[in-house]
Amino acid sequence: MSASVSKASVLKLLIETETDLVLVETKLAKAVSKMKVEKEMAFRKQLDLIDKELVELLPYLLETD
Image (cartoon, rainbow, N blue to C red; front, side, top):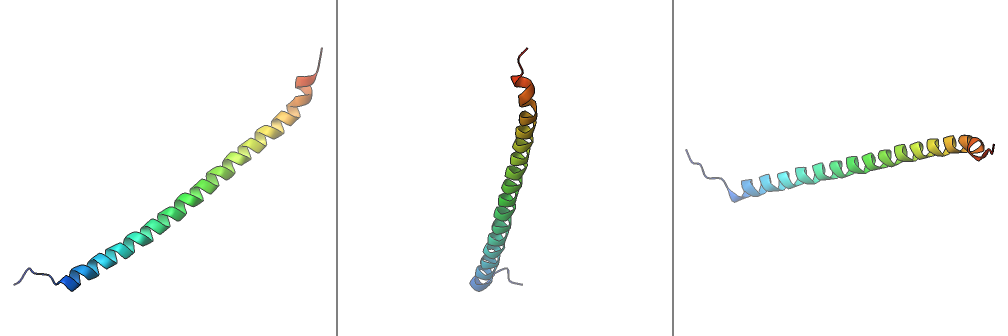
């Protein structure tokens, strides 16, 4: 029983590993981009809400006694 492995087998395994890593890296990059977009949209939504509330409050803030 021999424990030797051919260079071709090792190379094939390395290529498969590299391919898998590239795929995972691509998926991760897409997920991070999607998360950033969703975070930015949520932030803008909150800013819009704050802006709307300020517009509603402005007349009361500008009232003089």
